[in-house]
Amino acid sequence: MDVGRDLHMAKGEGETSYSKNSRLQVHTCNLLNQIPGILSTYISFLPPVLDKAVTEVCEALLGPTMTVCDLGCSSGENTLIFASNVVEAIVCNRHKFGCNPAELQFFHNDLPSNDFNLIFQSLEKFKEMVTLACKGETPPPLYTVGLPGSFYTRLFPRQSVHLFHSAYCLHWRSHFLSGLEGEGGAYQNEGNIYIAKNTPPSTVKLYKGQFQKDMLMFLKLRYEELVLGGQMVLSFPGRENEDVYDGDMNHLWGLLAQSMQSLVEEGCIEKEKLDSFSLPIYGPSLSEVKDVVEQTELYDIKHIKLFELNWDCCDESEGDDVLDHVQSGVNVANTIRAVFEPMLAIHFGESLSLIDAIFKKYAYYVAEHLKTVKTKFAVIVLVLKRR
Image (cartoon, rainbow, N blue to C red; front, side, top):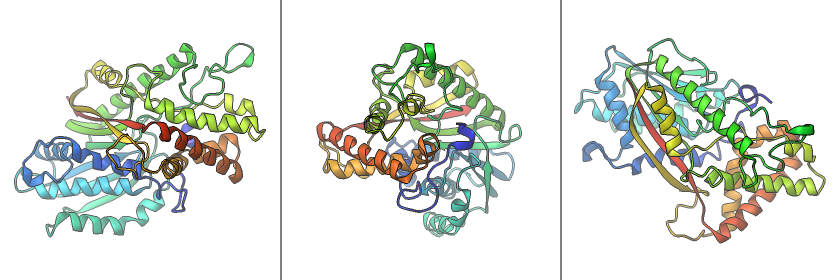
C-alpha cells in the first residue's frame, strides 16, 4: 500500500464516516482552551495558544493579506472550527493589538484522496459559525482554497505562509515501514500492527527512525514556506512515558491487533495478512519531539505540553471509573473505524462483513479493558516560531 494514495478517512456523512466520528479531533481543538491564558481576560474565552500565535503573526504582518493553512484538515467539523477560531482571534484582537489584516487566504490541505467536497459543502455553515463568533464585528474577507498534497512535500512558494496548523496528523508517517521481513520470509513483528511488548528492538528502531526522518523533513519544508517569524500550532498523539513499549497508542492498537488475531483463529483473516500489516504511525515522547526540533536549529519552541484525554471522548467525566464501559467501547471503535476502515479494507479486503466483525470485536475488547482501567490518550501541543 501507499500512504499518499490509500490514506484517507471514511468519506461521506454516514454513521461510520469521519464526519460523524471526529469528536476526538474537535475535542483537541477545544483542549487549547485549557492551556493557561497569556492574554487579558477580555479574550480568555478564546483558545489562548492559538490566539497568541494569531496575534503575534498579525502584529508582524507586512502586507494586507494573511495566509493560513490547516495541514491534514480531513473533512470533519474540526477543520471549520479551527478556521473560525482564527477569524475570531483576529476580530477580537484588532482594536487592542492592532491585529487587522485586510483579508485572509485560508488553505485546507490533505492528501488527494480526502473528501474535499464535504468541506466546500460546509462553507455556508462555516460562514454562520464566523458570524456568530464575531458577535457583530465585521470579519476580514476570507478566501478558501483546497490544497491536495502530502505535507511531507513542498506545498507553497518560499516565505508565503504566516500560520500553519495541524491537528491529529503528525503521528502519521510518510510511508509504510519497509524492512519488516526477517529471515526466511517471516515477519519481525508477527501478530502485531504497532509496537507491542514482544516487538523486536530492530522493529522499534525502524519506527523511531522513520519518525525522526519524517519530522525533520516536515520541519525543514515548513521553514522554507513560512515567513520570517511565522508560526505553527501543532497537536498530535504522543506518549507520556519515555519507554516506547509503554505508550497509550500501544494499548489502543494492541486491542485492535487482538481483534484481528481472534479472526485469524476463526479463519476469517489470513495469518500472513495480519503479520504483514503495520500501521504507519508513531507516538513520540515530549523529549523525542524536542530533540528533533532542536536538531534543526530553525525554530524557537514557544510552547510544548502534553495533555490527556479519555479514550472515549464522549465521556468527559473526571473520575477513575468509566461510566458505561460497553457504550464507551462502541464509541472508541466507531472513532477508530472512521479513521482506519479505508486502509484496512485495502489490505484485508473490502468485505463489509469482515470490517464489521473486526470492529465488533474491537468494541468488546476495548469495553473489557475500560472495565478494569480508565485509559487516556496522550496529546502533545506544540507551538513553533520560525527564526
